[in-house]
Length: 335
Image 1 (cartoon, rainbow, N blue to C red):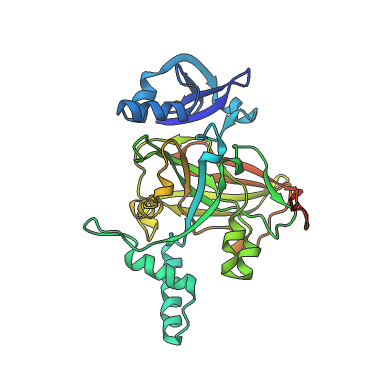
Image 2 (cartoon, rainbow, N blue to C red; image 1 turned 90 degrees about the vertical axis):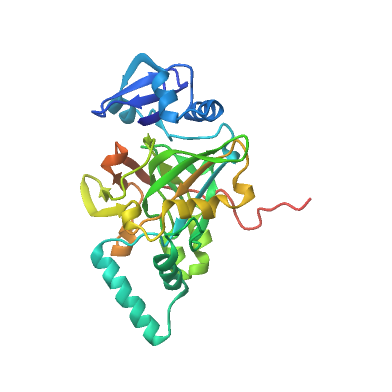
Protein backbone atom coordinates (compact mmCIF):
# COMPACT_ATOMS: atom_id res chain seq x y z
CA UNK A 1 0.00 0.00 0.00
CA UNK A 2 1.11 3.59 -0.71
CA UNK A 3 0.30 6.05 2.07
CA UNK A 4 0.81 9.81 2.33
CA UNK A 5 0.48 12.39 5.07
CA UNK A 6 -1.30 15.53 3.88
CA UNK A 7 -2.87 18.76 5.02
CA UNK A 8 -6.55 19.10 4.18
CA UNK A 9 -8.16 22.34 3.02
CA UNK A 10 -8.29 23.62 6.61
CA UNK A 11 -4.66 22.74 7.25
CA UNK A 12 -5.53 19.76 9.48
CA UNK A 13 -3.45 16.58 9.02
CA UNK A 14 -4.99 13.61 7.23
CA UNK A 15 -3.77 10.27 5.94
CA UNK A 16 -4.36 9.25 2.33
CA UNK A 17 -3.94 5.99 0.42
CA UNK A 18 -2.81 6.38 -3.19
CA UNK A 19 -4.66 4.39 -5.83
CA UNK A 20 -2.86 2.09 -8.26
CA UNK A 21 -2.93 4.71 -11.01
CA UNK A 22 -1.23 7.23 -8.70
CA UNK A 23 -3.88 9.89 -9.29
CA UNK A 24 -6.13 9.82 -6.24
CA UNK A 25 -5.55 9.94 -2.50
CA UNK A 26 -8.41 8.31 -0.66
CA UNK A 27 -8.61 9.66 2.88
CA UNK A 28 -8.64 7.45 5.97
CA UNK A 29 -11.22 7.91 8.72
CA UNK A 30 -10.28 7.74 12.38
CA UNK A 31 -6.56 8.44 12.06
CA UNK A 32 -5.24 11.96 11.52
CA UNK A 33 -1.60 10.92 11.13
CA UNK A 34 0.44 7.94 9.99
CA UNK A 35 2.09 8.04 13.42
CA UNK A 36 -1.32 7.46 15.07
CA UNK A 37 -2.20 4.78 12.51
CA UNK A 38 1.07 2.95 13.15
CA UNK A 39 0.71 3.17 16.92
CA UNK A 40 -2.78 1.67 16.63
CA UNK A 41 -1.50 -1.11 14.37
CA UNK A 42 1.22 -1.99 16.88
CA UNK A 43 -1.27 -2.00 19.77
CA UNK A 44 -3.67 -4.23 17.83
CA UNK A 45 -0.97 -6.54 16.47
CA UNK A 46 -2.29 -5.80 12.96
CA UNK A 47 -0.27 -5.10 9.79
CA UNK A 48 -0.20 -1.41 8.94
CA UNK A 49 -1.72 -1.82 5.49
CA UNK A 50 -4.53 -3.99 6.87
CA UNK A 51 -5.52 -1.35 9.40
CA UNK A 52 -5.23 1.36 6.74
CA UNK A 53 -7.45 -0.58 4.32
CA UNK A 54 -10.10 -1.02 7.03
CA UNK A 55 -10.07 2.75 7.69
CA UNK A 56 -10.54 3.90 4.08
CA UNK A 57 -13.30 6.48 3.85
CA UNK A 58 -15.37 7.89 1.01
CA UNK A 59 -13.52 11.19 0.58
CA UNK A 60 -10.80 11.41 -2.09
CA UNK A 61 -8.37 14.11 -3.26
CA UNK A 62 -6.57 14.72 -6.53
CA UNK A 63 -2.98 13.61 -5.82
CA UNK A 64 -1.35 15.87 -8.42
CA UNK A 65 -3.19 18.86 -6.97
CA UNK A 66 -1.99 18.01 -3.45
CA UNK A 67 1.61 17.92 -4.67
CA UNK A 68 1.21 21.07 -6.72
CA UNK A 69 -0.31 22.97 -3.79
CA UNK A 70 2.39 21.86 -1.33
CA UNK A 71 -0.08 19.97 0.84
CA UNK A 72 1.82 16.67 0.94
CA UNK A 73 3.86 16.38 4.14
CA UNK A 74 6.70 14.04 5.10
CA UNK A 75 5.13 10.58 5.42
CA UNK A 76 6.10 10.02 9.07
CA UNK A 77 6.64 12.66 11.75
CA UNK A 78 6.55 12.57 15.55
CA UNK A 79 4.26 15.02 17.40
CA UNK A 80 7.45 16.18 19.17
CA UNK A 81 10.28 16.53 16.58
CA UNK A 82 12.88 15.88 19.31
CA UNK A 83 11.60 12.29 19.41
CA UNK A 84 12.41 11.66 15.75
CA UNK A 85 15.98 10.50 15.08
CA UNK A 86 17.31 11.00 11.53
CA UNK A 87 20.36 8.88 10.76
CA UNK A 88 22.06 7.05 7.93
CA UNK A 89 24.64 4.53 6.82
CA UNK A 90 27.28 5.04 4.14
CA UNK A 91 29.55 2.87 1.98
CA UNK A 92 26.65 0.44 1.56
CA UNK A 93 26.10 0.40 -2.21
CA UNK A 94 28.01 -1.38 -4.93
CA UNK A 95 26.74 0.74 -7.82
CA UNK A 96 26.71 -0.56 -11.37
CA UNK A 97 28.65 -3.65 -12.44
CA UNK A 98 31.25 -1.46 -14.13
CA UNK A 99 31.70 0.66 -11.02
CA UNK A 100 31.95 -2.48 -8.92
CA UNK A 101 34.71 -3.88 -11.13
CA UNK A 102 36.56 -0.57 -11.00
CA UNK A 103 36.21 -0.50 -7.23
CA UNK A 104 37.62 -4.01 -6.91
CA UNK A 105 40.54 -3.14 -9.18
CA UNK A 106 41.23 -0.09 -7.03
CA UNK A 107 41.10 -2.23 -3.90
CA UNK A 108 43.55 -4.73 -5.36
CA UNK A 109 45.94 -1.99 -6.47
CA UNK A 110 45.79 -0.17 -3.15
CA UNK A 111 46.28 -3.43 -1.30
CA UNK A 112 49.35 -4.13 -3.45
CA UNK A 113 50.67 -0.67 -2.65
CA UNK A 114 49.89 -1.14 1.04
CA UNK A 115 47.75 1.98 1.06
CA UNK A 116 44.06 1.24 1.62
CA UNK A 117 42.26 4.31 2.92
CA UNK A 118 39.98 3.96 5.93
CA UNK A 119 36.94 4.45 3.69
CA UNK A 120 38.11 1.76 1.27
CA UNK A 121 38.82 -0.60 4.16
CA UNK A 122 35.27 -0.10 5.46
CA UNK A 123 33.82 -0.65 2.00
CA UNK A 124 35.84 -3.86 1.63
CA UNK A 125 34.64 -5.07 5.02
CA UNK A 126 31.08 -4.52 3.82
CA UNK A 127 31.71 -6.45 0.60
CA UNK A 128 33.17 -9.35 2.58
CA UNK A 129 30.85 -9.36 5.61
CA UNK A 130 27.88 -7.05 5.17
CA UNK A 131 25.43 -9.86 4.41
CA UNK A 132 25.42 -12.09 7.51
CA UNK A 133 24.72 -15.79 7.47
CA UNK A 134 23.18 -18.17 10.05
CA UNK A 135 21.64 -15.39 12.11
CA UNK A 136 24.97 -13.91 13.16
CA UNK A 137 25.56 -10.13 12.94
CA UNK A 138 27.46 -8.93 9.90
CA UNK A 139 30.15 -6.28 9.86
CA UNK A 140 29.20 -2.83 11.14
CA UNK A 141 28.55 -0.14 8.51
CA UNK A 142 29.59 3.47 8.58
CA UNK A 143 26.91 5.29 10.61
CA UNK A 144 26.07 8.97 10.98
CA UNK A 145 23.61 11.28 12.71
CA UNK A 146 21.79 13.97 10.72
CA UNK A 147 19.46 15.54 13.25
CA UNK A 148 16.00 15.29 14.75
CA UNK A 149 12.61 15.70 13.11
CA UNK A 150 13.10 19.45 12.78
CA UNK A 151 15.48 18.99 9.83
CA UNK A 152 13.00 17.06 7.64
CA UNK A 153 11.36 19.11 4.90
CA UNK A 154 8.28 18.16 2.94
CA UNK A 155 8.13 17.19 -0.74
CA UNK A 156 8.26 20.36 -2.81
CA UNK A 157 9.61 22.50 0.04
CA UNK A 158 13.03 24.19 -0.24
CA UNK A 159 16.06 22.41 1.17
CA UNK A 160 17.82 25.08 3.26
CA UNK A 161 21.62 25.25 3.03
CA UNK A 162 23.17 27.42 5.78
CA UNK A 163 25.47 30.25 4.77
CA UNK A 164 28.44 28.58 6.48
CA UNK A 165 28.09 25.49 4.23
CA UNK A 166 30.64 24.94 1.49
CA UNK A 167 28.25 22.90 -0.62
CA UNK A 168 24.70 21.60 -0.70
CA UNK A 169 24.22 18.52 -2.85
CA UNK A 170 21.68 15.76 -3.25
CA UNK A 171 22.00 12.11 -2.26
CA UNK A 172 19.16 9.95 -3.62
CA UNK A 173 18.43 7.21 -1.13
CA UNK A 174 16.02 4.68 0.23
CA UNK A 175 14.74 5.57 3.72
CA UNK A 176 13.43 3.15 6.31
CA UNK A 177 10.59 4.52 8.48
CA UNK A 178 10.26 3.07 12.00
CA UNK A 179 8.21 3.45 15.16
CA UNK A 180 9.40 1.97 18.45
CA UNK A 181 6.67 -0.01 20.18
CA UNK A 182 5.74 0.23 23.88
CA UNK A 183 8.00 -2.73 24.70
CA UNK A 184 11.01 -1.25 22.88
CA UNK A 185 10.62 -3.30 19.70
CA UNK A 186 11.40 -1.38 16.47
CA UNK A 187 8.63 -1.68 13.88
CA UNK A 188 9.40 -0.91 10.24
CA UNK A 189 6.36 0.78 8.72
CA UNK A 190 7.81 0.80 5.22
CA UNK A 191 10.10 2.73 2.93
CA UNK A 192 10.18 6.15 1.31
CA UNK A 193 12.31 8.11 -1.10
CA UNK A 194 14.84 10.43 0.49
CA UNK A 195 17.24 13.21 -0.41
CA UNK A 196 20.01 12.88 2.18
CA UNK A 197 21.22 16.40 1.40
CA UNK A 198 24.88 16.89 2.46
CA UNK A 199 27.89 19.22 2.29
CA UNK A 200 30.29 17.26 0.09
CA UNK A 201 33.02 19.90 -0.07
CA UNK A 202 33.34 19.87 3.71
CA UNK A 203 33.42 16.06 3.73
CA UNK A 204 36.09 15.88 1.03
CA UNK A 205 38.44 18.14 3.00
CA UNK A 206 38.94 15.32 5.49
CA UNK A 207 36.85 12.23 6.20
CA UNK A 208 36.80 13.23 9.89
CA UNK A 209 34.57 16.12 8.80
CA UNK A 210 31.87 13.64 7.73
CA UNK A 211 29.91 14.30 10.94
CA UNK A 212 29.83 18.05 10.22
CA UNK A 213 28.86 17.51 6.58
CA UNK A 214 25.78 15.50 7.52
CA UNK A 215 24.26 18.05 9.92
CA UNK A 216 21.97 19.46 7.25
CA UNK A 217 18.33 19.35 6.27
CA UNK A 218 16.90 16.41 4.32
CA UNK A 219 13.72 15.58 2.43
CA UNK A 220 11.60 12.42 2.71
CA UNK A 221 8.56 11.31 0.73
CA UNK A 222 6.13 11.84 -0.80
CA UNK A 223 4.94 8.28 -0.10
CA UNK A 224 5.37 5.53 2.44
CA UNK A 225 5.31 2.13 0.77
CA UNK A 226 4.38 -0.67 3.15
CA UNK A 227 5.65 -4.24 2.95
CA UNK A 228 8.84 -5.63 1.42
CA UNK A 229 10.62 -4.09 -1.57
CA UNK A 230 12.04 -5.68 -4.73
CA UNK A 231 15.73 -6.50 -4.35
CA UNK A 232 16.65 -4.56 -7.49
CA UNK A 233 15.42 -0.96 -7.56
CA UNK A 234 16.32 1.41 -10.39
CA UNK A 235 15.57 5.10 -10.42
CA UNK A 236 16.97 8.37 -11.67
CA UNK A 237 18.33 11.52 -10.05
CA UNK A 238 18.51 14.87 -11.82
CA UNK A 239 19.40 18.48 -11.19
CA UNK A 240 17.35 21.13 -12.96
CA UNK A 241 18.47 24.75 -13.35
CA UNK A 242 15.75 26.97 -14.71
CA UNK A 243 14.02 24.89 -17.34
CA UNK A 244 17.08 22.80 -18.25
CA UNK A 245 18.33 19.53 -16.80
CA UNK A 246 22.04 20.14 -16.17
CA UNK A 247 22.78 16.68 -14.75
CA UNK A 248 20.97 13.36 -14.74
CA UNK A 249 22.01 9.85 -13.83
CA UNK A 250 20.36 6.54 -13.00
CA UNK A 251 20.77 5.23 -9.48
CA UNK A 252 20.50 1.71 -8.15
CA UNK A 253 19.39 0.61 -4.70
CA UNK A 254 17.80 -2.40 -3.06
CA UNK A 255 19.67 -5.36 -1.62
CA UNK A 256 20.78 -6.65 -5.03
CA UNK A 257 22.86 -3.48 -5.38
CA UNK A 258 24.15 -3.27 -1.81
CA UNK A 259 27.04 -4.84 0.06
CA UNK A 260 25.01 -4.85 3.29
CA UNK A 261 21.64 -6.47 3.82
CA UNK A 262 18.88 -4.23 5.17
CA UNK A 263 18.58 -6.56 8.16
CA UNK A 264 22.26 -6.05 8.98
CA UNK A 265 21.95 -2.26 8.74
CA UNK A 266 18.85 -2.33 10.94
CA UNK A 267 20.54 -4.55 13.52
CA UNK A 268 23.54 -2.25 13.88
CA UNK A 269 21.28 0.78 14.28
CA UNK A 270 18.80 -0.67 16.75
CA UNK A 271 21.28 -2.69 18.84
CA UNK A 272 21.80 0.48 20.90
CA UNK A 273 19.26 0.73 23.72
CA UNK A 274 18.98 4.50 23.21
CA UNK A 275 17.59 3.77 19.73
CA UNK A 276 14.77 1.65 21.14
CA UNK A 277 12.94 4.22 23.25
CA UNK A 278 9.18 3.53 23.17
CA UNK A 279 7.23 5.96 21.02
CA UNK A 280 10.22 7.34 19.12
CA UNK A 281 10.31 7.65 15.32
CA UNK A 282 13.40 6.77 13.29
CA UNK A 283 14.10 7.83 9.71
CA UNK A 284 17.16 5.92 8.49
CA UNK A 285 18.88 6.56 5.15
CA UNK A 286 20.43 3.45 3.60
CA UNK A 287 23.06 5.08 1.37
CA UNK A 288 23.69 5.69 -2.32
CA UNK A 289 26.28 5.28 -5.04
CA UNK A 290 25.15 8.26 -7.16
CA UNK A 291 25.51 12.00 -6.65
CA UNK A 292 26.05 14.96 -8.95
CA UNK A 293 29.00 16.26 -6.91
CA UNK A 294 31.02 13.15 -7.85
CA UNK A 295 30.64 14.22 -11.49
CA UNK A 296 31.96 17.72 -10.81
CA UNK A 297 28.53 19.41 -10.66
CA UNK A 298 27.83 22.03 -8.00
CA UNK A 299 24.24 22.86 -7.13
CA UNK A 300 23.29 26.53 -6.85
CA UNK A 301 20.43 28.26 -5.00
CA UNK A 302 17.27 27.93 -7.07
CA UNK A 303 18.31 24.60 -8.60
CA UNK A 304 15.79 21.81 -8.24
CA UNK A 305 16.62 18.26 -7.14
CA UNK A 306 14.38 15.58 -8.66
CA UNK A 307 14.61 11.98 -7.42
CA UNK A 308 12.53 9.27 -9.02
CA UNK A 309 12.01 5.62 -8.12
CA UNK A 310 8.87 4.15 -9.72
CA UNK A 311 8.35 1.48 -7.05
CA UNK A 312 8.02 4.22 -4.43
CA UNK A 313 5.49 6.32 -6.30
CA UNK A 314 5.69 10.01 -7.14
CA UNK A 315 9.10 11.72 -7.47
CA UNK A 316 10.65 13.66 -4.61
CA UNK A 317 11.29 17.24 -5.79
CA UNK A 318 12.91 20.02 -3.74
CA UNK A 319 14.58 23.32 -4.69
CA UNK A 320 17.82 24.48 -3.05
CA UNK A 321 17.73 27.64 -0.93
CA UNK A 322 20.56 29.46 0.85
CA UNK A 323 19.68 30.63 4.37
CA UNK A 324 21.39 32.51 7.19
CA UNK A 325 23.05 30.25 9.73
CA UNK A 326 21.48 32.20 12.59
CA UNK A 327 24.48 31.99 14.91
CA UNK A 328 27.75 33.96 15.12
CA UNK A 329 31.09 33.44 16.89
CA UNK A 330 30.78 34.56 20.48
CA UNK A 331 27.08 33.81 20.47
CA UNK A 332 27.25 31.67 23.61
CA UNK A 333 26.28 33.62 26.73
CA UNK A 334 27.98 32.80 30.00
CA UNK A 335 25.65 32.78 33.03
